[in-house]
Image (cartoon, rainbow, N blue to C red; front, top):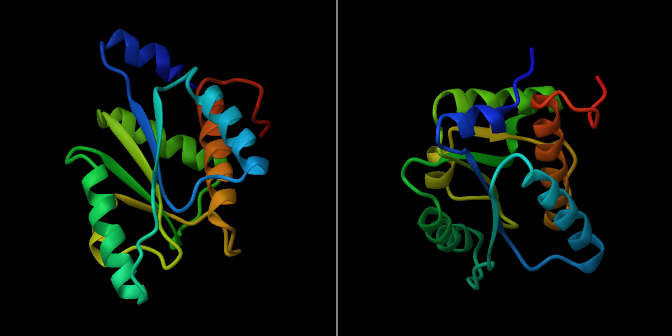
Length: 169
């Protein structure tokens, strides 16, 4: 049985919030339109926020990850559920992502933050902060496309949870 989480949360006088946090440059126009489209669709289910963190200016990968970790950890609240997108993570099906969101909602999470790290990944302290590490694929994608895939998959998960037509099993 699928529940309309939006209705359930409104009736409990709180609404789960989603945040997409990404290290990198602004989106190219060919990607920006798709991200905006799916982000707007997600707002029918959850309030959502995008935050871009500029890449660190250091030259060594470890220094870059350390500098970016400071910015990342400042952007994440102490009660936020952090889902790290990383090639070392576990793969999920679209229904699996919907189930993950449902589980966090059932645990009364106030905000789920999906994090796309920088070009060299994230520092170990960020990995340790994550409650779940998710790998989209064994393939490597440009970060801007990962943002688009993330937005589309979260929208798909929302449609699954609401038992809507977008996702066909």
